[in-house]
Image 1: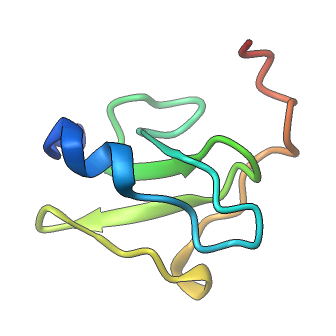
Image 2: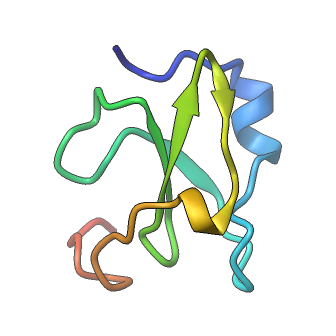
Length: 71
């Protein structure tokens, strides 16, 4: 199941890491995953029962910044 959050909520949510970058739905390799991924550090935060869990200790480490090739 893909993350289904209001677009206005996605605009204001940010990664709790020091860079505070915007989050995008899904994982780098699975856009349909129930995660929000930081556009800066690559950490992925789970979305449980429609609620984003933005705790660094719950995050899944992602690829290094810029490794995704997106631009």
